[in-house]
Image (cartoon, rainbow over all chains, first blue to last red; front, side, top):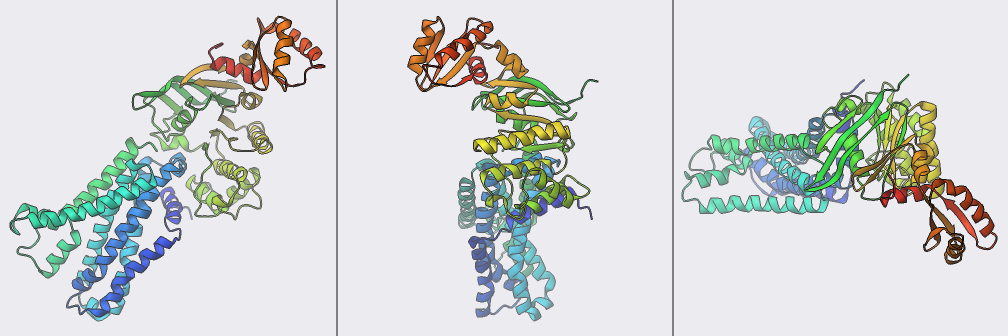
Length: 249
Length: 302
Protein backbone atom coordinates (compact mmCIF):
# COMPACT_ATOMS: atom_id res chain seq x y z
CA UNK A 1 0.00 0.00 0.00
CA UNK A 2 1.30 3.43 -0.93
CA UNK A 3 0.86 5.94 1.86
CA UNK A 4 0.64 9.68 1.21
CA UNK A 5 4.00 11.33 1.82
CA UNK A 6 2.76 13.47 4.69
CA UNK A 7 1.51 10.37 6.51
CA UNK A 8 4.96 8.78 6.21
CA UNK A 9 6.62 11.94 7.51
CA UNK A 10 4.10 12.06 10.37
CA UNK A 11 4.99 8.44 11.19
CA UNK A 12 8.70 9.33 11.18
CA UNK A 13 8.18 12.38 13.36
CA UNK A 14 5.70 10.71 15.67
CA UNK A 15 8.08 7.84 16.36
CA UNK A 16 10.47 10.51 17.63
CA UNK A 17 7.75 12.19 19.72
CA UNK A 18 6.85 8.89 21.31
CA UNK A 19 10.38 7.90 22.21
CA UNK A 20 10.08 6.65 25.76
CA UNK A 21 11.59 8.65 28.54
CA UNK A 22 11.34 9.01 32.29
CA UNK A 23 9.53 12.29 31.89
CA UNK A 24 6.84 10.68 29.79
CA UNK A 25 6.29 8.08 32.47
CA UNK A 26 5.90 10.92 34.95
CA UNK A 27 3.27 12.55 32.73
CA UNK A 28 1.27 9.35 32.51
CA UNK A 29 1.51 8.89 36.28
CA UNK A 30 0.41 12.47 36.93
CA UNK A 31 -2.45 12.20 34.50
CA UNK A 32 -3.69 9.05 36.20
CA UNK A 33 -3.59 10.70 39.62
CA UNK A 34 -6.93 12.29 38.81
CA UNK A 35 -8.49 8.89 38.20
CA UNK A 36 -7.17 7.58 41.49
CA UNK A 37 -8.34 10.66 43.39
CA UNK A 38 -11.77 10.40 41.78
CA UNK A 39 -12.49 7.41 44.04
CA UNK A 40 -12.57 9.80 46.98
CA UNK A 41 -15.28 11.97 45.51
CA UNK A 42 -18.91 11.68 44.63
CA UNK A 43 -19.89 12.91 41.16
CA UNK A 44 -23.39 14.01 40.34
CA UNK A 45 -22.79 14.43 36.62
CA UNK A 46 -20.38 13.30 33.93
CA UNK A 47 -19.09 16.88 33.29
CA UNK A 48 -18.21 17.10 37.00
CA UNK A 49 -16.41 13.78 36.73
CA UNK A 50 -14.47 14.98 33.64
CA UNK A 51 -13.66 18.28 35.35
CA UNK A 52 -12.29 16.56 38.42
CA UNK A 53 -10.22 14.02 36.54
CA UNK A 54 -8.96 16.09 33.65
CA UNK A 55 -7.96 19.28 35.51
CA UNK A 56 -4.72 17.73 36.88
CA UNK A 57 -4.25 15.96 33.55
CA UNK A 58 -4.39 19.30 31.76
CA UNK A 59 -1.53 20.58 33.89
CA UNK A 60 0.46 17.42 33.10
CA UNK A 61 -0.32 17.85 29.41
CA UNK A 62 0.77 21.48 29.45
CA UNK A 63 4.04 20.50 31.14
CA UNK A 64 4.58 17.74 28.62
CA UNK A 65 3.91 20.07 25.70
CA UNK A 66 6.26 22.70 27.09
CA UNK A 67 9.07 20.37 28.06
CA UNK A 68 8.86 17.79 25.29
CA UNK A 69 6.98 19.17 22.28
CA UNK A 70 8.10 22.78 22.35
CA UNK A 71 11.65 21.92 23.39
CA UNK A 72 11.65 19.07 20.87
CA UNK A 73 10.68 21.38 18.05
CA UNK A 74 13.35 23.92 18.94
CA UNK A 75 15.86 21.12 19.43
CA UNK A 76 15.12 19.87 15.92
CA UNK A 77 16.28 23.24 14.60
CA UNK A 78 19.22 23.29 16.99
CA UNK A 79 20.63 19.92 15.92
CA UNK A 80 19.37 20.39 12.36
CA UNK A 81 17.10 17.36 12.09
CA UNK A 82 14.60 19.84 10.68
CA UNK A 83 16.99 20.34 7.72
CA UNK A 84 16.42 16.68 6.84
CA UNK A 85 12.64 17.18 6.89
CA UNK A 86 12.95 20.32 4.78
CA UNK A 87 15.09 18.54 2.21
CA UNK A 88 12.25 16.08 1.51
CA UNK A 89 9.99 16.86 -1.45
CA UNK A 90 7.13 18.08 0.72
CA UNK A 91 5.70 21.59 0.87
CA UNK A 92 6.70 23.62 3.89
CA UNK A 93 3.08 24.03 4.96
CA UNK A 94 2.69 20.24 4.92
CA UNK A 95 5.82 19.82 7.07
CA UNK A 96 4.46 22.47 9.46
CA UNK A 97 1.08 20.72 9.61
CA UNK A 98 2.73 17.36 10.26
CA UNK A 99 4.79 18.86 13.10
CA UNK A 100 1.66 20.31 14.71
CA UNK A 101 -0.22 17.03 14.41
CA UNK A 102 2.60 14.85 15.67
CA UNK A 103 4.05 17.20 18.31
CA UNK A 104 0.84 18.81 19.61
CA UNK A 105 -2.47 17.30 18.52
CA UNK A 106 -1.69 13.61 18.95
CA UNK A 107 0.23 13.77 22.27
CA UNK A 108 -2.26 16.26 23.76
CA UNK A 109 -5.20 14.09 22.74
CA UNK A 110 -3.55 10.89 24.00
CA UNK A 111 -2.65 12.32 27.41
CA UNK A 112 -6.17 13.68 27.91
CA UNK A 113 -7.93 10.61 26.53
CA UNK A 114 -6.01 8.08 28.62
CA UNK A 115 -7.43 9.01 32.06
CA UNK A 116 -10.75 10.07 30.53
CA UNK A 117 -11.24 6.59 29.10
CA UNK A 118 -10.10 4.95 32.34
CA UNK A 119 -12.58 7.03 34.35
CA UNK A 120 -15.25 6.36 31.73
CA UNK A 121 -14.86 2.63 32.35
CA UNK A 122 -14.81 3.00 36.15
CA UNK A 123 -17.88 5.26 36.17
CA UNK A 124 -19.59 3.65 33.20
CA UNK A 125 -23.16 3.93 34.61
CA UNK A 126 -22.79 7.70 35.14
CA UNK A 127 -20.86 8.34 31.92
CA UNK A 128 -23.20 6.10 29.92
CA UNK A 129 -26.24 8.16 30.89
CA UNK A 130 -24.54 11.45 29.86
CA UNK A 131 -22.09 10.23 27.25
CA UNK A 132 -22.42 13.28 25.01
CA UNK A 133 -21.72 15.71 27.85
CA UNK A 134 -18.73 13.62 28.90
CA UNK A 135 -17.38 13.65 25.33
CA UNK A 136 -17.94 17.42 25.10
CA UNK A 137 -15.87 17.90 28.24
CA UNK A 138 -13.08 15.68 26.90
CA UNK A 139 -13.14 17.65 23.65
CA UNK A 140 -12.97 20.94 25.58
CA UNK A 141 -9.94 19.78 27.54
CA UNK A 142 -8.26 18.62 24.33
CA UNK A 143 -8.95 22.01 22.72
CA UNK A 144 -7.42 23.76 25.75
CA UNK A 145 -4.36 21.47 25.70
CA UNK A 146 -3.91 21.92 21.96
CA UNK A 147 -4.18 25.68 22.47
CA UNK A 148 -1.29 25.56 24.95
CA UNK A 149 0.65 23.32 22.57
CA UNK A 150 0.14 25.73 19.69
CA UNK A 151 1.33 28.64 21.83
CA UNK A 152 4.44 26.67 22.77
CA UNK A 153 5.05 25.65 19.15
CA UNK A 154 5.05 29.26 18.02
CA UNK A 155 7.47 30.03 20.86
CA UNK A 156 9.69 27.15 19.70
CA UNK A 157 9.92 28.62 16.20
CA UNK A 158 11.46 31.77 17.60
CA UNK A 159 13.35 30.39 20.62
CA UNK A 160 15.56 28.12 18.47
CA UNK A 161 17.10 26.49 21.54
CA UNK A 162 15.38 23.61 23.29
CA UNK A 163 16.10 24.86 26.80
CA UNK A 164 14.97 28.41 25.98
CA UNK A 165 11.81 27.12 24.31
CA UNK A 166 10.81 25.03 27.33
CA UNK A 167 11.51 27.81 29.84
CA UNK A 168 9.64 30.46 27.84
CA UNK A 169 6.78 28.02 27.24
CA UNK A 170 6.46 27.24 30.94
CA UNK A 171 6.57 30.95 31.82
CA UNK A 172 3.92 31.69 29.19
CA UNK A 173 1.71 28.94 30.60
CA UNK A 174 1.91 30.29 34.14
CA UNK A 175 1.54 33.93 33.06
CA UNK A 176 -1.53 32.99 31.00
CA UNK A 177 -3.17 31.26 33.94
CA UNK A 178 -2.22 33.93 36.46
CA UNK A 179 -3.57 36.56 34.08
CA UNK A 180 -6.89 34.72 34.07
CA UNK A 181 -7.05 34.84 37.85
CA UNK A 182 -6.04 38.53 37.95
CA UNK A 183 -8.68 39.49 35.38
CA UNK A 184 -11.29 37.55 37.30
CA UNK A 185 -10.41 39.31 40.56
CA UNK A 186 -10.32 42.73 38.94
CA UNK A 187 -13.72 42.27 37.33
CA UNK A 188 -16.44 44.34 38.97
CA UNK A 189 -19.33 42.10 37.99
CA UNK A 190 -19.92 38.80 36.19
CA UNK A 191 -21.35 40.89 33.37
CA UNK A 192 -18.15 42.86 32.84
CA UNK A 193 -15.92 42.26 29.84
CA UNK A 194 -12.97 41.57 32.13
CA UNK A 195 -14.83 38.73 33.82
CA UNK A 196 -15.95 37.33 30.48
CA UNK A 197 -12.42 37.54 29.18
CA UNK A 198 -11.01 35.74 32.21
CA UNK A 199 -13.62 33.00 31.90
CA UNK A 200 -13.07 32.63 28.17
CA UNK A 201 -9.36 31.92 28.74
CA UNK A 202 -10.31 28.47 30.07
CA UNK A 203 -12.37 26.80 27.38
CA UNK A 204 -13.06 23.67 29.44
CA UNK A 205 -14.48 25.87 32.21
CA UNK A 206 -16.79 27.62 29.75
CA UNK A 207 -18.03 24.30 28.41
CA UNK A 208 -18.45 22.95 31.94
CA UNK A 209 -20.49 25.98 33.00
CA UNK A 210 -22.56 25.81 29.83
CA UNK A 211 -23.32 22.14 30.44
CA UNK A 212 -24.01 22.36 34.17
CA UNK A 213 -24.94 25.97 34.86
CA UNK A 214 -22.75 25.80 37.96
CA UNK A 215 -21.24 28.97 39.49
CA UNK A 216 -22.29 31.44 36.85
CA UNK A 217 -24.47 34.47 36.85
CA UNK A 218 -25.02 34.34 33.11
CA UNK A 219 -24.56 31.56 30.58
CA UNK A 220 -21.38 31.78 28.47
CA UNK A 221 -21.79 33.84 25.34
CA UNK A 222 -20.14 33.71 21.92
CA UNK A 223 -16.96 35.45 23.14
CA UNK A 224 -16.33 32.88 25.86
CA UNK A 225 -17.14 29.94 23.60
CA UNK A 226 -15.08 31.13 20.66
CA UNK A 227 -12.07 32.72 22.37
CA UNK A 228 -9.77 29.70 22.82
CA UNK A 229 -10.86 27.81 19.65
CA UNK A 230 -10.44 30.94 17.51
CA UNK A 231 -7.11 31.77 19.10
CA UNK A 232 -6.01 28.18 18.48
CA UNK A 233 -6.97 28.42 14.82
CA UNK A 234 -5.13 31.73 14.55
CA UNK A 235 -2.03 30.26 16.20
CA UNK A 236 -2.11 27.20 13.92
CA UNK A 237 -2.57 29.39 10.84
CA UNK A 238 0.20 31.73 12.02
CA UNK A 239 2.55 28.81 12.70
CA UNK A 240 1.96 27.31 9.26
CA UNK A 241 2.15 30.66 7.44
CA UNK A 242 5.38 31.64 9.18
CA UNK A 243 6.91 28.21 8.67
CA UNK A 244 6.01 28.27 4.99
CA UNK A 245 7.12 31.76 4.15
CA UNK A 246 9.80 32.86 6.55
CA UNK A 247 11.05 30.16 8.87
CA UNK A 248 14.75 29.55 8.56
CA UNK A 249 16.17 27.03 11.03
CA UNK B 1 26.10 17.06 -26.80
CA UNK B 2 25.88 19.83 -24.18
CA UNK B 3 24.94 18.67 -20.71
CA UNK B 4 21.80 20.08 -19.12
CA UNK B 5 22.13 22.40 -16.18
CA UNK B 6 20.82 20.71 -13.04
CA UNK B 7 21.50 23.59 -10.69
CA UNK B 8 21.92 27.25 -11.36
CA UNK B 9 22.75 29.83 -8.74
CA UNK B 10 22.33 33.40 -9.94
CA UNK B 11 23.51 36.43 -8.04
CA UNK B 12 22.62 35.05 -4.60
CA UNK B 13 22.71 37.44 -1.68
CA UNK B 14 21.96 36.44 1.86
CA UNK B 15 21.75 38.81 4.80
CA UNK B 16 21.67 37.93 8.48
CA UNK B 17 20.29 41.14 9.88
CA UNK B 18 22.33 43.73 8.03
CA UNK B 19 25.38 41.54 7.63
CA UNK B 20 25.76 39.96 4.21
CA UNK B 21 26.72 36.28 4.42
CA UNK B 22 26.67 35.86 0.64
CA UNK B 23 27.39 38.59 -1.88
CA UNK B 24 26.11 37.95 -5.39
CA UNK B 25 27.34 34.38 -5.82
CA UNK B 26 26.70 32.75 -9.20
CA UNK B 27 27.60 29.41 -10.72
CA UNK B 28 25.98 26.39 -12.29
CA UNK B 29 26.28 22.63 -12.10
CA UNK B 30 25.73 20.51 -15.18
CA UNK B 31 24.37 16.99 -15.34
CA UNK B 32 26.96 14.40 -14.27
CA UNK B 33 29.41 17.07 -13.16
CA UNK B 34 31.32 17.09 -9.89
CA UNK B 35 31.70 20.61 -8.58
CA UNK B 36 33.57 21.58 -5.44
CA UNK B 37 32.74 24.55 -3.28
CA UNK B 38 35.82 25.68 -1.39
CA UNK B 39 36.41 28.35 1.19
CA UNK B 40 37.64 28.92 4.71
CA UNK B 41 35.34 28.62 7.71
CA UNK B 42 32.76 31.40 7.70
CA UNK B 43 33.02 31.99 3.95
CA UNK B 44 29.32 31.19 3.43
CA UNK B 45 29.57 27.62 2.08
CA UNK B 46 26.99 26.12 4.43
CA UNK B 47 24.63 29.07 4.01
CA UNK B 48 24.83 28.66 0.24
CA UNK B 49 24.26 24.89 0.44
CA UNK B 50 21.24 25.38 2.70
CA UNK B 51 19.81 27.90 0.23
CA UNK B 52 20.37 25.44 -2.62
CA UNK B 53 18.55 22.68 -0.71
CA UNK B 54 15.66 25.04 0.13
CA UNK B 55 16.23 25.22 3.87
CA UNK B 56 17.09 28.92 3.80
CA UNK B 57 15.69 31.65 1.60
CA UNK B 58 17.94 33.85 -0.48
CA UNK B 59 17.60 37.56 0.31
CA UNK B 60 18.21 38.33 -3.36
CA UNK B 61 18.94 36.33 -6.48
CA UNK B 62 17.64 33.08 -7.86
CA UNK B 63 18.34 29.39 -7.33
CA UNK B 64 16.99 26.93 -9.83
CA UNK B 65 17.26 23.29 -8.86
CA UNK B 66 15.99 20.98 -11.59
CA UNK B 67 14.12 23.91 -13.06
CA UNK B 68 12.39 25.35 -10.01
CA UNK B 69 12.94 27.22 -6.77
CA UNK B 70 13.83 24.73 -4.01
CA UNK B 71 12.45 26.97 -1.24
CA UNK B 72 9.02 27.27 -2.83
CA UNK B 73 8.66 24.18 -5.01
CA UNK B 74 8.90 20.80 -3.28
CA UNK B 75 9.13 19.01 -6.64
CA UNK B 76 12.58 20.51 -7.23
CA UNK B 77 13.81 18.41 -4.28
CA UNK B 78 12.50 15.12 -5.75
CA UNK B 79 15.84 14.23 -7.29
CA UNK B 80 17.99 15.80 -4.60
CA UNK B 81 20.05 13.95 -2.03
CA UNK B 82 21.34 16.09 0.82
CA UNK B 83 24.25 15.32 3.13
CA UNK B 84 24.35 17.96 5.88
CA UNK B 85 27.49 19.38 7.42
CA UNK B 86 27.03 17.56 10.70
CA UNK B 87 25.49 14.22 9.80
CA UNK B 88 22.27 14.05 11.75
CA UNK B 89 19.25 11.83 11.27
CA UNK B 90 16.30 10.96 13.49
CA UNK B 91 17.37 8.32 16.03
CA UNK B 92 13.96 6.98 16.91
CA UNK B 93 14.27 3.99 14.59
CA UNK B 94 16.93 1.75 13.12
CA UNK B 95 18.91 2.99 10.12
CA UNK B 96 17.26 0.33 7.95
CA UNK B 97 13.75 1.44 9.01
CA UNK B 98 14.69 5.09 8.63
CA UNK B 99 15.97 4.51 5.09
CA UNK B 100 12.84 2.57 4.23
CA UNK B 101 10.70 5.41 5.62
CA UNK B 102 12.71 8.00 3.69
CA UNK B 103 12.31 5.96 0.48
CA UNK B 104 8.54 5.96 1.11
CA UNK B 105 8.54 9.74 1.49
CA UNK B 106 10.12 9.91 -1.98
CA UNK B 107 7.43 7.47 -3.22
CA UNK B 108 10.03 4.86 -4.14
CA UNK B 109 8.17 1.81 -5.55
CA UNK B 110 10.30 -0.66 -3.53
CA UNK B 111 11.31 1.08 -0.30
CA UNK B 112 12.73 -2.04 1.41
CA UNK B 113 14.94 -2.89 -1.57
CA UNK B 114 16.01 0.75 -1.83
CA UNK B 115 17.00 0.75 1.85
CA UNK B 116 19.07 -2.43 1.47
CA UNK B 117 20.78 -1.08 -1.64
CA UNK B 118 21.60 2.24 0.03
CA UNK B 119 23.03 0.37 3.05
CA UNK B 120 25.22 -1.68 0.71
CA UNK B 121 26.44 1.28 -1.36
CA UNK B 122 27.32 3.28 1.75
CA UNK B 123 29.13 0.32 3.29
CA UNK B 124 26.74 -0.04 6.20
CA UNK B 125 26.16 -3.77 5.98
CA UNK B 126 25.83 -5.17 9.47
CA UNK B 127 24.84 -1.80 10.95
CA UNK B 128 21.31 -1.50 9.56
CA UNK B 129 19.65 -2.48 12.82
CA UNK B 130 21.42 0.17 14.87
CA UNK B 131 19.94 3.60 15.46
CA UNK B 132 21.79 6.68 14.23
CA UNK B 133 22.96 7.55 17.76
CA UNK B 134 24.65 4.17 18.12
CA UNK B 135 26.96 4.70 15.12
CA UNK B 136 30.55 5.98 15.15
CA UNK B 137 31.39 9.29 13.43
CA UNK B 138 32.46 7.57 10.22
CA UNK B 139 29.40 5.33 10.15
CA UNK B 140 27.14 8.34 10.84
CA UNK B 141 28.62 9.99 7.77
CA UNK B 142 27.93 6.82 5.80
CA UNK B 143 24.37 6.71 7.14
CA UNK B 144 23.87 10.28 5.96
CA UNK B 145 25.18 9.27 2.54
CA UNK B 146 22.87 6.23 2.47
CA UNK B 147 19.96 8.50 3.39
CA UNK B 148 20.86 10.86 0.56
CA UNK B 149 21.07 7.96 -1.90
CA UNK B 150 18.02 5.95 -0.92
CA UNK B 151 15.68 7.49 -3.49
CA UNK B 152 18.21 7.27 -6.34
CA UNK B 153 18.68 11.03 -6.73
CA UNK B 154 20.04 12.89 -9.75
CA UNK B 155 22.10 15.30 -7.70
CA UNK B 156 23.78 15.03 -4.33
CA UNK B 157 24.56 18.17 -2.39
CA UNK B 158 27.06 17.40 0.34
CA UNK B 159 28.23 19.90 2.92
CA UNK B 160 31.71 19.02 4.23
CA UNK B 161 31.13 15.28 3.82
CA UNK B 162 34.58 14.46 5.19
CA UNK B 163 34.74 16.78 8.17
CA UNK B 164 35.34 15.16 11.57
CA UNK B 165 36.70 11.99 9.96
CA UNK B 166 40.14 10.44 10.28
CA UNK B 167 42.37 10.49 7.16
CA UNK B 168 41.60 6.87 6.21
CA UNK B 169 37.84 7.35 6.52
CA UNK B 170 38.12 10.69 4.67
CA UNK B 171 39.72 8.95 1.73
CA UNK B 172 37.10 6.20 1.72
CA UNK B 173 34.23 8.71 1.70
CA UNK B 174 35.89 10.68 -1.11
CA UNK B 175 36.36 7.49 -3.11
CA UNK B 176 32.72 6.59 -2.54
CA UNK B 177 31.57 10.00 -3.79
CA UNK B 178 33.88 9.81 -6.82
CA UNK B 179 32.59 6.33 -7.55
CA UNK B 180 28.99 7.49 -7.41
CA UNK B 181 29.85 10.20 -9.89
CA UNK B 182 31.79 8.07 -12.37
CA UNK B 183 29.86 4.80 -12.21
CA UNK B 184 26.34 6.04 -11.58
CA UNK B 185 26.61 9.38 -13.31
CA UNK B 186 25.43 11.22 -10.21
CA UNK B 187 25.82 14.98 -10.27
CA UNK B 188 27.65 16.14 -7.18
CA UNK B 189 28.15 19.44 -5.47
CA UNK B 190 30.23 19.26 -2.33
CA UNK B 191 31.97 21.67 -0.02
CA UNK B 192 35.30 21.47 1.73
CA UNK B 193 37.92 23.81 3.07
CA UNK B 194 40.67 21.50 1.82
CA UNK B 195 41.50 22.40 -1.78
CA UNK B 196 43.67 19.32 -2.32
CA UNK B 197 40.65 17.15 -1.52
CA UNK B 198 38.33 19.07 -3.82
CA UNK B 199 40.79 19.42 -6.66
CA UNK B 200 41.35 15.65 -6.69
CA UNK B 201 37.68 15.06 -7.52
CA UNK B 202 36.14 18.14 -9.09
CA UNK B 203 35.88 19.23 -12.67
CA UNK B 204 35.23 22.78 -11.55
CA UNK B 205 35.55 24.57 -8.29
CA UNK B 206 33.95 27.64 -6.81
CA UNK B 207 36.01 29.45 -4.20
CA UNK B 208 34.18 31.61 -1.68
CA UNK B 209 35.76 34.21 0.53
CA UNK B 210 33.69 36.29 2.96
CA UNK B 211 30.55 35.39 1.02
CA UNK B 212 31.96 36.38 -2.33
CA UNK B 213 32.96 34.18 -5.25
CA UNK B 214 36.65 34.76 -5.82
CA UNK B 215 37.30 31.95 -8.26
CA UNK B 216 35.24 29.78 -10.59
CA UNK B 217 36.95 27.35 -12.93
CA UNK B 218 38.98 24.17 -13.06
CA UNK B 219 41.25 23.33 -10.11
CA UNK B 220 44.14 23.09 -12.57
CA UNK B 221 43.70 26.66 -13.75
CA UNK B 222 43.72 27.83 -10.13
CA UNK B 223 46.90 25.95 -9.33
CA UNK B 224 48.59 26.99 -12.58
CA UNK B 225 48.12 30.67 -11.95
CA UNK B 226 49.51 30.40 -8.44
CA UNK B 227 53.07 31.45 -7.69
CA UNK B 228 53.20 30.18 -4.12
CA UNK B 229 54.86 26.94 -3.07
CA UNK B 230 54.93 25.56 0.46
CA UNK B 231 57.73 23.21 1.41
CA UNK B 232 57.30 21.31 4.66
CA UNK B 233 60.45 20.67 6.63
CA UNK B 234 61.60 20.11 10.18
CA UNK B 235 64.24 22.83 9.74
CA UNK B 236 62.50 25.83 8.19
CA UNK B 237 65.26 28.28 9.17
CA UNK B 238 68.00 26.33 7.36
CA UNK B 239 65.81 25.76 4.30
CA UNK B 240 64.77 29.42 4.14
CA UNK B 241 68.39 30.48 4.38
CA UNK B 242 69.49 28.05 1.63
CA UNK B 243 66.70 29.17 -0.70
CA UNK B 244 67.21 32.88 -0.07
CA UNK B 245 70.87 32.41 -0.93
CA UNK B 246 69.67 31.09 -4.31
CA UNK B 247 67.66 34.27 -4.83
CA UNK B 248 64.16 33.04 -3.89
CA UNK B 249 61.67 35.19 -2.04
CA UNK B 250 60.90 33.11 1.04
CA UNK B 251 58.81 33.29 4.21
CA UNK B 252 59.54 31.11 7.21
CA UNK B 253 56.67 29.36 9.01
CA UNK B 254 56.47 26.99 11.97
CA UNK B 255 57.18 23.78 10.04
CA UNK B 256 57.37 25.02 6.49
CA UNK B 257 58.80 27.60 4.14
CA UNK B 258 56.59 29.56 1.78
CA UNK B 259 58.25 30.46 -1.51
CA UNK B 260 56.92 33.13 -3.85
CA UNK B 261 58.00 32.54 -7.43
CA UNK B 262 58.51 35.34 -9.92
CA UNK B 263 56.59 33.31 -12.46
CA UNK B 264 55.09 29.84 -12.66
CA UNK B 265 57.87 28.77 -15.06
CA UNK B 266 60.36 29.00 -12.18
CA UNK B 267 58.75 25.94 -10.56
CA UNK B 268 60.98 23.51 -12.47
CA UNK B 269 64.12 25.32 -11.32
CA UNK B 270 62.85 25.39 -7.74
CA UNK B 271 62.23 21.63 -7.79
CA UNK B 272 65.75 21.03 -9.08
CA UNK B 273 67.20 23.30 -6.40
CA UNK B 274 65.15 21.58 -3.70
CA UNK B 275 66.36 18.16 -4.80
CA UNK B 276 69.92 19.36 -4.18
CA UNK B 277 69.09 21.01 -0.86
CA UNK B 278 67.24 17.84 0.25
CA UNK B 279 70.59 16.19 0.84
CA UNK B 280 71.30 18.62 3.70
CA UNK B 281 67.87 19.73 4.92
CA UNK B 282 65.01 17.20 5.39
CA UNK B 283 62.08 17.96 3.08
CA UNK B 284 58.74 16.28 3.84
CA UNK B 285 56.45 17.63 1.12
CA UNK B 286 56.11 20.21 -1.61
CA UNK B 287 52.64 21.66 -1.97
CA UNK B 288 51.41 23.95 -4.70
CA UNK B 289 47.69 23.20 -4.30
CA UNK B 290 46.77 24.46 -0.82
CA UNK B 291 49.27 27.29 -1.34
CA UNK B 292 47.32 28.32 -4.43
CA UNK B 293 44.11 28.54 -2.40
CA UNK B 294 45.91 30.46 0.32
CA UNK B 295 47.26 32.89 -2.25
CA UNK B 296 43.78 33.37 -3.65
CA UNK B 297 42.26 33.89 -0.23
CA UNK B 298 44.94 36.40 0.64
CA UNK B 299 44.05 38.30 -2.49
CA UNK B 300 47.12 37.41 -4.51
CA UNK B 301 45.28 35.95 -7.47
CA UNK B 302 41.84 35.58 -8.91
